[in-house]
Image 1 (cartoon, rainbow, N blue to C red):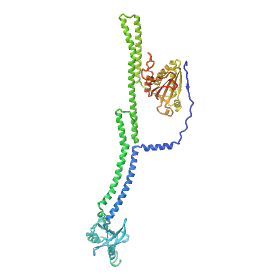
Image 2: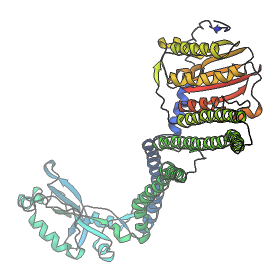
Image 3: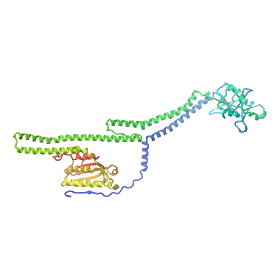
Image 4: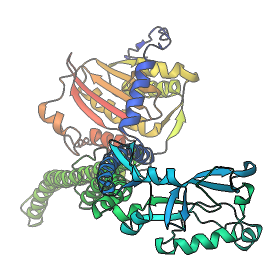
Length: 565
């Protein structure tokens, strides 16, 4: 095609990678497990703290209660030892001697309700006079039979009815509960109580004759048991130990550990993260965006922190974009004022010459030349004004993306590059290359489409090729690929990269920094105002990309334009 040289590099289809190995699954599972514990949800963290609290508080309470009760048993036993230990009974009351006699119960008809209490008078009195030695909790103790004298001298003992031998009328009158085992009978009222109850209850003693048990035997249908009243010998220290063990220790163990653990939980998973996020929100509200929101604890608040970080980054990028726009406009105004000086100066000089002719000091031929200069400069100002209007309207241009197959996009870009170089490159040749990532995308899933505004892409390419053809010696290279390449081409929003390289002298140091600025050119002319790369950058940014200037390692200028696809 004329002086155009076409070269397309087509790589052989590479073999698909092998199936992913499974050797890394245990490692991934372990990593997920660590992440699960390292950043749990607030609910899971709460239940974890609650479990630790329950176990720790229960262990502390059990150990403390056991220790306090051991002290209580020792102290209370010492106080109990101040009183004589008595046999519980049963005892008969002997009205003839006003004394209690230790008795033996005889159950009639295999019934616990019908009982005859038998006391051997002389044997009971002999045993009452001598002490009985029995084993205690941790010491031997002296156990004696209860006597009326002991009960009258030490009011710490209580006398209760043994029960049994109630009549049917007594059951009906009391609703089936004629016997209260916790009722205490005062010692002074015992004789009257005994006489009354013997007459009122079943006469079970009639079951035996006078000589059935031999001589000196006392029978009765009423008996009693004697016990030391615990409340009578417990001191404030005993009660304090019991209350502490029963109430104080659980309250302190469960309540104290709850305060410590759940305070830590609140500060770690709620209060602390919310304070960090609140501080970040205040900095964002104050337009201080030059920081990074770090991840916080708790999966829910961590997600909120990530969303706020994305918002901060978006606001920062928007702020930088506004700054770049303002800077571009400042430079545009400065360039506009600078470039207007030349035609204005020419017009000013020409008008002065016309004034001289009007005064008769110049020939008509000179006037015609002045008018030609004025016409030329006016045309230049018109072109300049049109270029300015085009630049200022670019930022309001809408980008209309449409799905296009990668192969179709490659063909469209190649056709435009071929036609443009053929029309503007004179003796320049064109080399067209497609990268591996773009070829892989073309083959994958039948060519998963890209989202591109092809009109914007082609207009940007035209401006970049215009600059390349103006500086190339013999060859312009256009390369297409998806960035960053590799597995990233499978992302939902890949980036199309168009690289244009020429074999000319390359960019100067100043051009590398200001080549995309409006009206920057090292070789300005009346027709070219240095807007090509500036227009390319504005359109690329509207398409979510950027323009990067560089010098190729082998020499020549290299312009890389990216488009969010």
